[in-house]
Image (cartoon, rainbow, N blue to C red; front, side, top):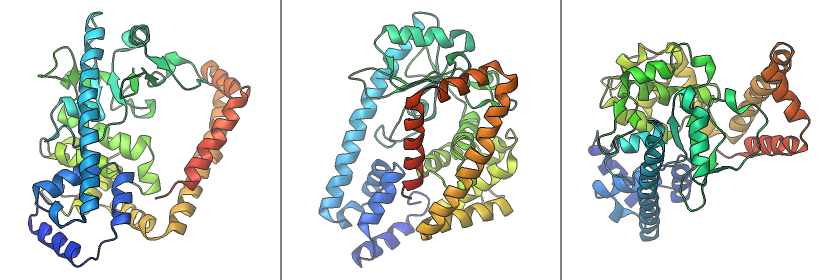
Length: 358
């Protein structure tokens, strides 16, 4: 980390000036991890931009400016959403990137690339929120094969001319983690947004927990040995507000959390004040992560084996079994199997997954 260790800047400049960096691979990696605007700002603040190839420096600047403009538009979109919902006595809690942006976690509004706008409302307001926004021009744009009432979040909705897609959550995470991280727990510590009255964001501790669940559990990062450096950077910033050891006391899957936090420490070259613990799981995760980057064969082979085992060998039979005693699961299975578009979309999903580059 340049901010933590300014001497690293001199090492980086030396590597740049001796032409030992493959800039194409560097840009591809940073782009895949959605951190090009962040790289631009860090290089700029540490006077490294002038050492870069001129075309690359201009490219990074252009990406940053585009992202800054988009994030400013998203802030306006957040204001509009809040106003619409407040008129109907609904007060959203914004999550992940949009919540961090409102909470001024980033030093610069263009620092973080945002995807969707995720926000949490109570179960009683879940469908009403979707209806209000659909009346304002938002609409579902993907097919649906299950009951909306029971989803973690409403199907993604978008509005022409607006930068971000919305995900309206009635649950902050999938139900298998609900016993130790749920809306009721979040609401106990949620923080009002000073710059935008009428909405909330997560406490720093809960933000750390959600960061871990989203990156390592919901998206199976721990299984695959993969991690998003955008998520890691969010974790780093949150750790400057609340200690990770304090947050980990509220996490049930502690071994996996220790693995994630220990890897973040290693990835950023930080000392034990960031996070003091480690375990075998952290060692194994680091090995898988390193092998993923060192070997294309390992990356695709390991990824394929894990996917087939957990999604096909275990996942599909589990859904079939559930359909025998759950009306909701049965209806979901029937809707999928009876819709020809589902087969095409599933094949496309598998194809995208298996051919995806590192």
